[in-house]
Length: 263
Ligand code: ADP
Figure 1 (cartoon, helix red, strand yellow):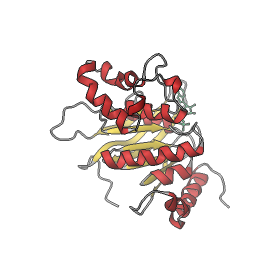
Figure 2 (spheres, rainbow, N blue to C red):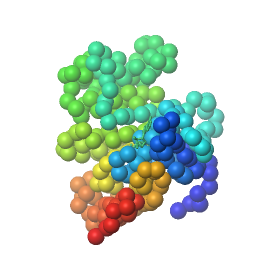
Figure 3 (cartoon, rainbow, N blue to C red):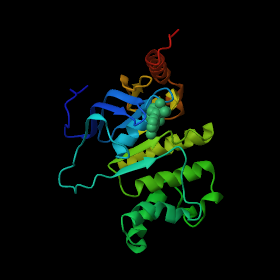
């Protein structure tokens, strides 16, 4: 493991000793430290209410830290425009807009005309395999397809960081597995940096190169477990001893940090 040096060349974002207390006095995070590296797929797991969404919201700038630091690396030679894509558990599509217009929305909000955005939007829709559905309305799509539209919308700005908050939690297992594999392909192909929150230890280990375990509220990082092996993530990986051992390690870390005795 490299030394935890702040803002090393490939750090995308770093939270240092972050505390977050809401106006009603609830402390969601205390002494929270996390570093996200360029091109890395990081899974975050923790019991419900431990502060996972709060971490993502702080990173996205939707909420402010009470104390501590949130540092962003500015890639050299790039504009100061740090773009973050956010995918929520619900696809939150505009029902009156076609798939194409839903994906176009972030660029429209940035002032891009349809003509200027056309190619970028088409590419984002192709990335998630929905080119044939660009003209349809969300109500005509399955739950998994709606989520793919939501992912395309998050990727359309070419974000330096993709935040995903339990995006597949509401889907059936088969669809979830298919989207897991599709997401991994996108991550590899486009060298995305992803922070992925999930309730599922199995999903966290399948997707992540590392799994960050949070304590119960106030959340802090209690374990940071590497999922070694650069090999394929597929059915064979799901059946492998390494996968099951890593799931067991994460489950134990989760139980310990939630104050539950492990067997
Ligand atoms: P998780 O995503 O792990 O389920 P959250 O980050 O959503 O947890 O919430 C962490 C804690 O902070 C919870 O106890 C939640 O009730 C509380 N919380 C979240 N948002 C607010 C808010 N805006 N005001 C007050 N408390 C909040």
